[in-house]
Every structure is written in structure tokens, then in C-alpha cells.
Amino acid sequence: MPELLDFGKNSIFIWTCYGVTIVVLGAMIITSLRKKKLAKKALAIVLEEQKP
Amino acid sequence: MLSYFANPVRFKTLSKWVAPILGIGAAVLIIPSWIMALFIVPADYQQGDTFRIMYVHVPAVFAASGAYAFLAIASFFSFVWRHPLADTAARVAAPIGAAFTFLGLFTGALWGKPMWGAYWVWDARLTSTLVMLFLFLGYMAIRAAIRDENISARIGAIAAMAGAINLPIVKYSVEWWSSLHQSASINLSGSEIDNSMSTTLFVGIIGYFCLFGWLVINNMLSELDTRRTRALVIRSSDQRPSTASKQSTGNPDA
Image (cartoon, rainbow over all chains, first blue to last red; front, top):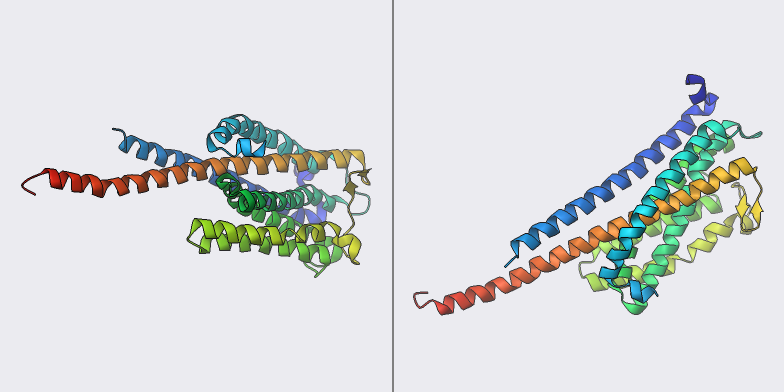
């Protein structure tokens, strides 16, 4: 396994690229899901408050 | 067709079907493409293993350019027909496009160092991509700085449409000017790279576009809920004083 992950002297460049990509895409996905959840929750609270 | 889906209720109904398809599509395309890129595809005969950066660099730049085209088209619809949904689409697409552009530039810099000996050169392709990042950031700054929603949407749309001139510059910069950046390896007529490499790359590119679509739809749904919440709060706060005044006039002791 370690030799599978070793890309020689340029390993650092390759793994940094994939690492940063995973972090940025992951952050976008998590932020999007959280935003959607919070927006839904806020709307539900307001609708509940305004029930006649 | 587009005006049919410019209705928030219809959009929400449609997005219930489309969003999961795009989300699952993104996961089942991006993850295997990375596994293929890192462990299965053979090393390039000239660049060695460094070319594996291509599988995160090229899809990011494609998605960034696609995101800018989407931003410009949505801005056009928002500007001409004043569809609030088109404006919402433009607004949520900008930060996603900026993130993809950043990834394209960052991975490109890390690919450039071992290949060219420099992280950055003021080459036409790199510079025009950097300009694209600034266009995304500029659009976001305009939308954040102007409080009036209508004026903010109009000015933002003009800026986004004007910035679309940069898209053909990004695409054709390697042909128009002498460039350190390689010319296009894949185009509509085919691919100059080996099938095993180009298939993995295509899978990754489609996956990134699915992810972009999923993020746009998800963020649009959040924005629509937030706007509805805001409207309900404003309406109820507008009704409260009149209710209070009715109560006060109805009470003889008041």
C-alpha cells in the first residue's frame, strides 16, 4: 500500500492537489447542506409562529 | 420552456427529482475518476506521475468556465425578463464558480512547478483564468455591497454579462498567443491523449458538472426558503402595529 501512494519526488504536489480539492469540495457540500437545513428550520419556525 | 420553470413552486417540484440525480451522479463519477486517476491509469511517458494532477485540474477549470457561462446566462435572463429565480441562480452560482476557479489555479500552480519550474507565469491562459476569478469575486462584492435588491441584481447582471467576454479569451488564449500552457488535448473532434486517460478525465468532468448543478439547486432552495422567511417576518411585523392600533382603539381604557 505505501508504494501505491508514493509518486516519487512529486508526491507532495500530487497529494496536495487532491487534498485541497477534497477540502474545498467537501466544504462546499457541507456548507450547502447546512444552509439548506437552517433555511428550512427558520421557515418552519416562522410558519409555526404565524399559524392562526 | 425556461419561463415555465421560472416559477418557484415548479422549480421546487422539479428540483426534488433533479437534485438527487445530480448529487448521486457527482459521487459515482468523481470518486471513481479519482481512484482511476491515482491508482489505475498508467503514468505519462513524459510527465511521469505528475500528470495525475490533470484529473483534478482540468475538471475544475471546465466547471469554472461552465459556472461563468451559467452566471452570464442567468444574469441575462434576470436583466431582460427580471425573473427573480434567474437572479437567485446567478447569485448562488458565483461563489461556487469562484471556488472551482481557485481550485483550477491552485492545482495548475502545483502542476506548473515540477513541469515548468515555476508556480506562476504571466501567461495568457493563466492570467485570463485569474481574471475570471476576479470577475466572480467582483460580482459577489457587488451583490454584497448594494443593499437594494433590485439595483444590486441589475448592476451585478451587467457586470456578469460584460465579464463573459473573458470566456473565449480563456478558451482560445493558448491559440491566440504564444503560451507556456499546452493547447487543448480534448475537443469536440476527439482526444489527443490515450483512451484510458481521456475516459477517466471525461468521467471527472461530467462529475464536476453534476456537482455544480447539485450545489446550485441546493443553494437556490436555501435562498428561496430564506427569502420566504424574510417576507413572512416583514409581513407579520407590518401587520402588528395595525393590529395593535385596532386593539387600542377598541379598548375604551386605552
